[in-house]
Image (cartoon, rainbow, N blue to C red):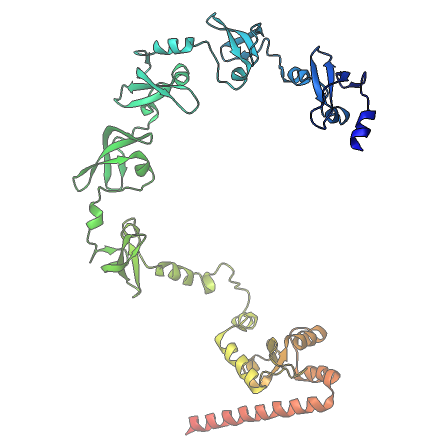
Length: 441
């Protein structure tokens, strides 16, 4: 059925892109092919489905046309592109002239990716650098190329160091191995070390300096270790015994059994009696105490010496303004109130919620009752906030609390609480009387 349908399709004379169908070609199995001619003149047998589905529109000349990028007049390194080469190969080549005058056919791809930049004359010129002098550098021989394809030269500096440099850096003004930029440290002192001379050695571009220690030993030290204060001696301080030495208020007792980052710790006793462990390098720069000096300084800034001291108010006013709710006495008082009420809110009866010990007679208005257990009651955070929302903060009284509670829970519950408060007051009064009797006897 499909074969019969296929015979009915006649593509002769039809156009598909640049193809013009000439005649039907010989079948290949069940597939029908047509002999087609492209606008460029090429003839080819094309699969029928490729024509009707527009999968092919030419013999391939379209792709060749799109791939050609005109490089005429462009420069690539020392190359100047003159024209497309007449010598046809599988790849497109361009006729180029080098700055030295040579003309050569070059692959277009090697031009664009930078693989070809000259006719080879640069290698001949490179050989001419051997023995040339650039300021303090004398070119010895060619080493090879670096990762960027630049030629590397081995050079000897006047200071005696051997270094490597590219052709571009030499022609660009490189003057030395780096010694010309080095800061002269001769005569400088770093800890116990005094710099004597440049040793002539280099490490990572840094100068290695010959130094003499106060103990008399000579050592070579990297300039970066000197400038960062990483090295302060030849190593003689590592075995130094500081036992019995004094540093301000500190006296070294003994070497500690512990280490800090691999460094020895020394157990020291301060004149204040405190014992601390410090590293040796923390002692030598002038560590004078355990920190007690700063504490004494802070104490000297209290009272009249404090920056916010107000001489215009009396001691009585000052004490009344002082906030003491987070002191030790307050913590004990709060705990006693919670225990007496079994950690239950006396307003709503909740247990285990965030609780507050509320002063029935306000903290500011009744200072003598601040730590009186009869003057407190347990409230949850919600009941506590609600009371102060309606009655404000400060100058509150037992009567205000009773009236507020009566509105919430009724008179019956209020009377029970008042009985509890009265019993607490009677206990305190009895304890005070017993104390007075003991004092008189």
